[in-house]
Image (cartoon, rainbow, N blue to C red; front, side):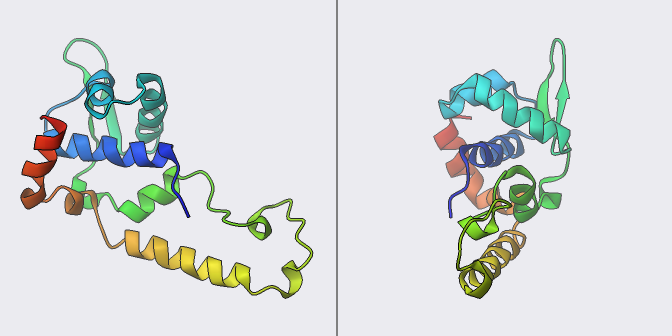
Length: 144
């Protein structure tokens, strides 16, 4: 299984905002820090705002900031809400054409693995990713 770039960027935006909290950042600052496309990042941030993870303020002194406490942002829930497709194999798709689906045990195994994957991620919060012992290293690498 592989998460999309969109989900990866969503996680990185939230980590960045948690590290500079309570300050705001601009999309341009985050894009430059990570060396990523500003246009792609705008789509990610728009979704994070829509989902209530990020707050956006327009105008002078505006920018984006976390809308929730990092300890209240569950990584599994975030990934489930941002990731567009967890249909790992053909038989998970609505237009499934696999002829062995009625007798195959693979869907059950993969569904169980996916459930455990999400449960594991839900044990962690954004605060866990930005604990004080990790902050110095993260800030150094991000040049904050």
